[in-house]
Length: 308
Image 1: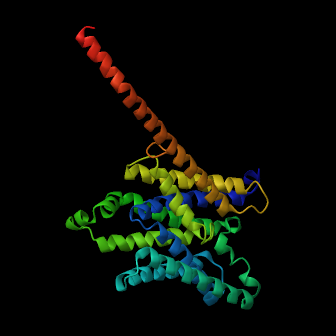
Image 2 (image 1 turned 90 degrees about the vertical axis):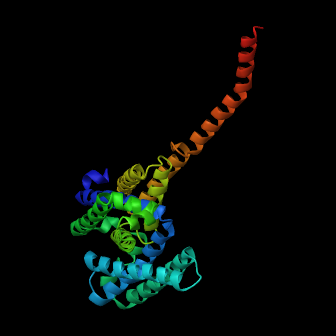
Image 3 (image 1 turned 90 degrees about the horizontal axis):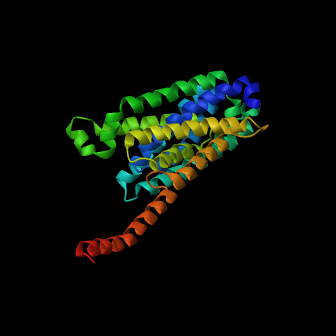
């Protein structure tokens, strides 16, 4: 098995585990803010920043590229809010505009840089679909450290996030700054996106944010357990996808991670304890059966009481 033969695979596995957990937890925040499309918009908006950061510095150091991606994604988030607040355009439409414009700009810049940058540009286009197998130990350290920061922010501020998401008016009355929480939410969302695009790519990164959270929703109504479930599904998808990708030569890690998370979603869709299709169908059949048997039961009771 390739995983046992390649020491680098263990580092990739570690980073994908942390990334999956962080993505699942942030995906829960985006789910309850009803901004699942925002993750897609910002992941695409990060691409121009990666290319511009490389064009300015001429190096492919991950911290530099992450900084460029973060700035570009934050500009995208600001533009979404600006368009919504200054026009009659709805939020989902604004997200779609930012997504398409920034991604088109990123592809255009990438094409120009590829033609003028020489051999040092090789591999830069891997940010579109991800290139987890090419990560080195320093990349893993960077991704893992930033991922743990995201996990800590969400978990340590659990009560504040719960108030912010479900009762912002009450949170404001308690003195919690809604503007600060919105800024913090945008910050952690951008952070988890920019640390994941090298491994998963700008196109697939949104799936790693959305699918674990939606899958966990099928198992519980509790926000706390949904966070834990999404973290487990995201981390499990990262580990399983990485292991499968190591079994073949040149198999991409990002797509296998997304397919693994999709498998968890299908299982949750069918057998989830709260809304699973199979569980709901069984409950409906049980309820219909009890309703059909109720008149007969009442008739037997009347006959027995009447002495017949």
